[in-house]
Image (cartoon, rainbow, N blue to C red; front, top):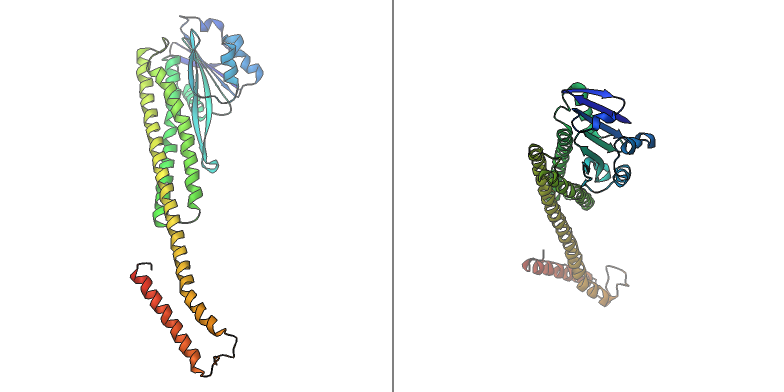
Length: 321
């Protein structure tokens, strides 16, 4: 689907085509073209209408790439990622959004539906001045909204981590290891998304390109600061989940050691009892023991109980129990 917005004299309209005269410097017209999962026919506007470089067009229409910023003379080509966290899949799903930024135009290309761009299109419909500040300001608005969508997902991660900490130290169970590893995978996905995003926006904030004015650079610097904080939180999550995994494994090891200690004590207690019972062979008609006196059976039982009590007392004095 292709959507075209034209802004002139602070009035924004949705149109069905792009006039080449609008793209000329000093035309006073700003254009935003949004391509959502474009068909081959719709994507021809990138080459025939805007004359973008074939390599940039190929990247824009291909699978996900890492965030980057490239200059093609009179326009910039950017790849940024919107976040789409899906907890059931235990990973951060991202949707790359490709931008072509020129003095008179902004072109966005993305597969499927982007909630950020859908919101911006709604603003354009409601507000005639949505494109009144120009394509670079519109780019900032979109990027800022994309970064803002990270915050709810970060808060959800923090809540999940708090729940894991409570369960590990108060209600440990066997499924915790899988939950911790799933959370670790989520944090790794977050880092893979945020780190390159930060570096790409940093180039816009440093005003490496003439098309980014000083005023716009300040705005992108604010977005960059938000991304820096997200990166710091991702690193903090990584440290916390590593500590939680170590704590859980230590608890499992201690529980296993406790079980092995109990089993070892039981085996040690039964060793002398086995020796005693083996002396008589136990192949007799109880309670009569071989050798005469029926009371011998009860003497042997008393001796066995005394051995058990003595060994338990010794184990307790050694703090093995």
